[in-house]
Image (cartoon, rainbow, N blue to C red; front, side, top):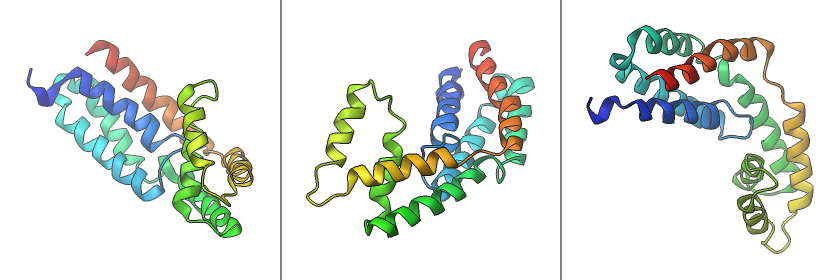
Amino acid sequence: MSRRASPKDVKALVGWLERDALALAGPSLEDRRERFDFIVEELARREQLDSARIRPVRVALKRQRDRLPGFAKVLDGKLAAIAQRFDVPEYQVRAVCLLQRKPETSQAHWQRREQLNRPPGWKFHGILEAVSDAMDETHRSRSMVGNLNGVLPELKLLNKNI
């Protein structure tokens, strides 16, 4: 089996899909779509590992491309509004959003939180509260959740069986 068709690669692609394209705390919609497209393309390159399983999942993902990360557009709008309200650059608000990926019990969370809270005059606590509220109010649609329930378990099962 060549380096281009490694079962470990499929596992990494599934992780990226969950973390970088479909997780609530993630990059912008544009970045998510780029990553989503990359993941689908890479799955296509690995179909020869198990075509009967990878192809249906890849095709389902490709068909649902525009619907799956649609919630990100809503979140992007909310984060832009927070940046405007607090008069800070959007990338700083996004960084606070990405902090939500890390468990509060982890050292990485608290180290990153301390880094984000350092700049003088930075309105970290207000922004953190606003971002948390925005994320709590941003729901992934039932259709998306239904689609994910059909696709992600297949990919996870695929990881175990390749």
